[in-house]
Image (cartoon, rainbow, N blue to C red; front, side, top):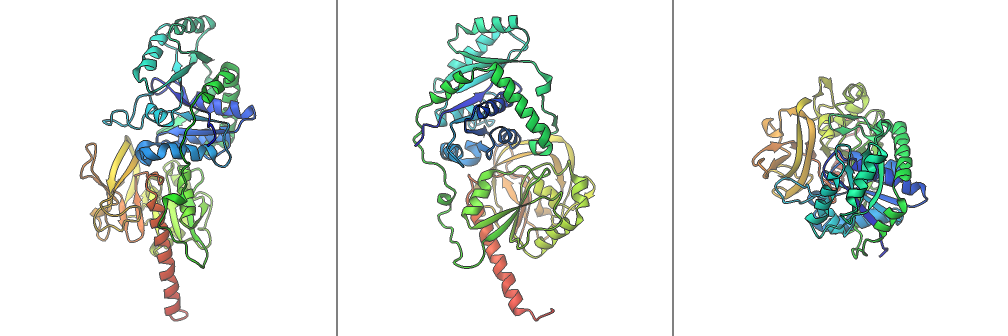
Length: 482
């Protein structure tokens, strides 16, 4: 097993500049000629999109809740080695270093992942509102959990040289080295909207320029040699890499015939998709083909199943609606029994309307923006009697909700012939139902990381094979021209 040099970029809380420093480090180290892998703690899709611009590889997430604690290190190793072994891995944290899922004593926190990976931590501290007090903050973080090694500090939003000197002098007594500093720079700001940063895929040219500037600023203000020494101080990680095929022991590919073709939504409106979903589908015998609901007017030829992941369809509702040929093609595919799994953005797209704009109409609901943010981990179960396209009825599934829209009615149980997609049973959500399920369709707000629920890939592929076989039988038995 390679040494896998690695470090975690953390902060005392949100807003200190983790994404700025982590993304800038990835870009600066890549500019040095190093192969860099980037990882994000938690379920967030947006920050990893900027990571990918910086390091040129597929983004990766590490989440003990969604993936299972036992998979975090193997998934990290897989990401660090794929498609090539990385010279260094940068793992961006979430919220404050010790902040995790509410009510779970720090589970899924940055510190939790750092412990699982035995990775040293670099703390990014916004010093714009303090000077010597920064040392007290850093000292507290260094001592709070002896199992988490705080290996350095990066000072962010330094005001002046005198300000920086004052902070550095105070930090000298903590024993935690200062690895560098960045001043205030409005040019490094990334535009935001209702769910956080605007995804990189929606502003590709601007994102590339911004990441390049970040890399230059970090290279100028941070001691990259010291950063690499921190990363190389991580001990060997004796863990076998995650393998999609090993998660699917019951998969049996058909001896003849073409692979199952899964059309997977992408583009600016559907930018949320975990890489492991594609890897699991491929291991289960699928050919994954992208379709952009903003641009493509037809599904890929031979589509056997649809995966409609997350994104921002509410921002593009008018354009999605204007692409009537694809909306009608998706509706026809659903009507013909093509299996469909839709998460969040996919649910909104399948509704009758989104913000008053006609959508696919495959789900009996109307979606609209809401002033309320719905955010958090959930434990969900497929209701009894539902098709179970993602999981078997009654089986607990970890998921995450993140949206500012609502769908009325809220779940399929209100409509004849439909089931709710999920029932929730934790954190005050006990008994709540959400989503829509019928025949070979499952649509809900819940994001599920398929690395934590690998059977979802098998279930979708099995449903697609069954539907394809049924269609072939109908072609044989129906009279010509019927």
